[in-house]
Amino acid sequence: MSTQFRTPEQNAIVNQLVQTFQIDGSKVLFLNEQNRNEPWLNYKALTRIGKLSGRFRSMAEHFATYIEPLREVVHSATVIDADGFEYTRSGSAKVGESLAAGEEADAHDLASSRALRLAFDAADFDPIKGGIPTLNLQLSSDQHAAQDQALSRKNDLARIHMLAVQKGLIKPREDDPSQNDLTDYRDFIATNFAGVNTAAALKPVERAALINALNEYQTPARAGLASQ
Image 1 (cartoon, rainbow, N blue to C red):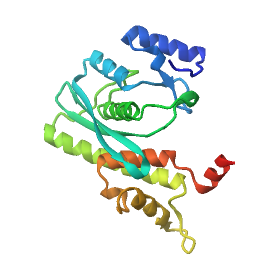
Image 2: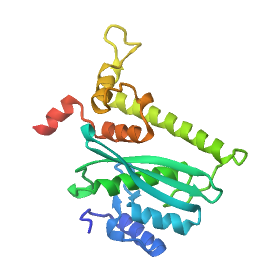
Image 3: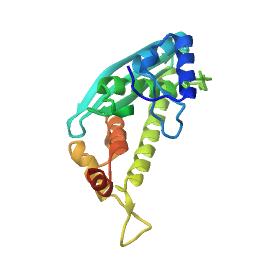
């Protein structure tokens, strides 16, 4: 059972989820520091909500890969909506990653839940609020899949670049501040992905692992402070 302290508002949200979807309320956590009332749901709860919604023909996930240098477990999830359109996304978790109240998460469950939540997002489905699909019904299934993969790649690369800038791996060049110094960024990728030094060359599961690794990355200065 979770030992995370809950506010009255969070307890009300958990009670409503349990009553509506008959999920295990003890597994519901609140991890978003920017939105303290946004619940985190594990893979089992997400699949139950997805099934009850009637929005999907099928939902499935599988273990995709383990990236040793990052100690990252990556899972992929695929949902097929009522119109037959397919959405596949990858989620990653670090082995030993901690959740609320210092609880160590099961990396496989965490990665699979992240993958399914991302697949739901791609299908315009919010498992908490419900969602309204915004599909281009003029596209064939193959065209839709290609468009969705391209959009996923574009979004991943934009997020990777943003995180790399925030973490100081991409910074202005000293000799020309109008240009970016990518040395540390490319070294970070090459160290963890067998010599590849650009995110554009990574597969979807590898991009998911890189995003999670960047989220967890501490700059040398911050890492030094944390160890003191």
